[in-house]
Every structure is written in structure tokens, then in C-alpha cells.
Length: 105
Image (tube, rainbow, N blue to C red; front, top):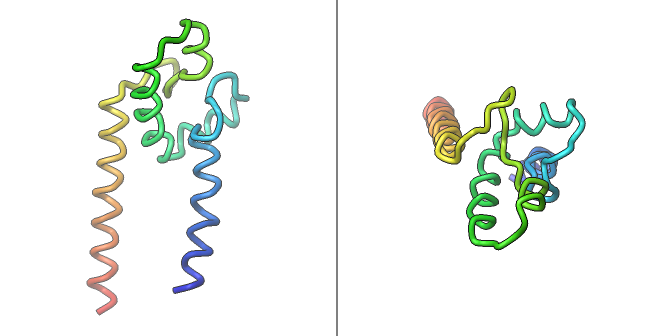
């Protein structure tokens, strides 16, 4: 059980840094942008960032720099789709977890 927590930290820490929770996703190199789009935590962080920035009064250029959103090949991903990605991934992983626990007994 103690080893599990160490392994989870090794997985979650890079995902947290690549999700945009620590820094804005604007002006990233192309290889790093690909990693952030593949990272599932990005789709959980971005709706929270959108909610915060919707209540802030900042100039449009600052909003574009600090709150660029997630883009797929130039398509701006809407917040509802991001939440759907998070819910779908959560449901799939919950199913995998249930199947693994049933198999372990």
C-alpha cells in the first residue's frame, strides 16, 4: 500500500505540471502542446480556469495569454466537451477498476 502512493505521485506530478494548473498553456512549444492535449488532467483544469476568468475583469489580450483554452488542430474545445471527456474517462477507468477488483477476488 505504501508503494502505491509513491507510484501515484510519480504519475500525478507530471500530469499536474502538464495540465496548465501551474502555468498558462499559451505560447508553448509544439511538442509540449501535444503533451498537454493528451494529458487528461488538462480537461479537468481548463473548465475551472474558464470559470475563474469569466468572473475577472481583465483586458482581452491578458485573457488570451493566461486563458487560451484547449485546442485540437485549431478547434477551440468547448467547456462542455471538456467536461464530457473527463466524465467519459472517469467512467471507463471506474469500469476497469471494478473489473480488476472482481477478478482479484
